[in-house]
Length: 470
Image (cartoon, rainbow, N blue to C red; front, side, top):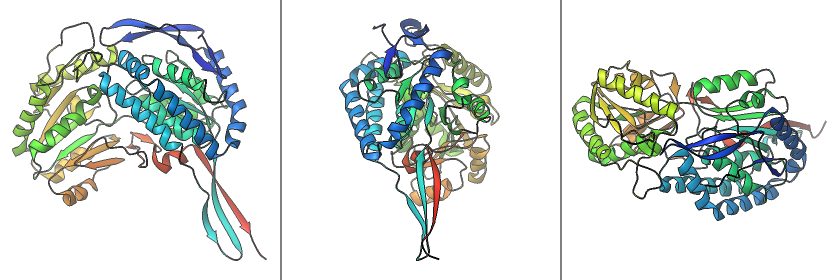
């Protein structure tokens, strides 16, 4: 594995002040070294970004979009390199890594064609009132370890096309795809427009409180998001927070279990369940629970668990040891409180592997039901009354996403309209078109990503109020 990864600061690829070890979660062993930036390098990156911002903002949408198109093409030319790095550092099966790369390319290509037009609020013979949007300046994008490339692209593409410049700070356990993006971007984008800083979780506070940073876009856990929000308060900088979720799937009495079970299983176990929008808990009519658990258990037992680089693997490892141990603790508690119908046993080997696990008969206050497990462990809860089930779905501090499963789409829409979260799907899950915004309610976040709303989050509205005649 190559050992020459570098930071991108001010248009130049440079070594870090020190290094970080990067662990392959499929083996539990170090396989690469990454540069580690220090405070001085973070200050250099902020200064370079502020220097680059005026010229980049002045280009206009068409020219900035052309740069994004060239960047998308450059990423595509290295697509297999990106995919293999993602599998090695994150653990997901190689075909899922290739999907993440393809989606990232698609994000840059989509936003390259978008722009925010002035909006006329009032126009008469005597006055014209227009809302304009202008870029904020330096954006700090702080990204998690579950989708290192895609979750950066979702921030970077709309931020850059609207005229901002961006500094990327990936999770310490998955820095390599971001560093490779910096390497690719160095030959495409003007100096300072995009930069990379990798750290050991010690630069986030500097970026979020720095007066030279205008916007922080953070994706990660709710506790860390609260820290980001607190550190951004002194400068009243703008922010977008996409945080945790305890996303429920609500199965209605008319649902065809044979049809919906594979979709629910996929929605819960994709990327080994390490998805903020993954299905984290299921509520089903008591008379349907046996059939649903049998179907989910059969799918879980058919999973191929292993190194994501091996052909045929469907479930890779948990990304890091801390999360691995956390998910194991959830399973141990679930075994004591409920019934494990599939999985639940240790997987031999040195990696951080957890077999897809289906649990039933848990009390509603079990940790696995109340909290975000972020792993391939799914509780199925029985209900006797739909109103009570909806109340249970809503009885959470989180409000990121949910799904409703039914044979009657109109009934599904009516039920979805009673669920308190940012996105509710009916008879589908994890469907996220670029032109549709998403974001959380309650403690699942503030702001929106994707769509026009996601672009607007990176801009400041300005009202121009013109008197045309006396």
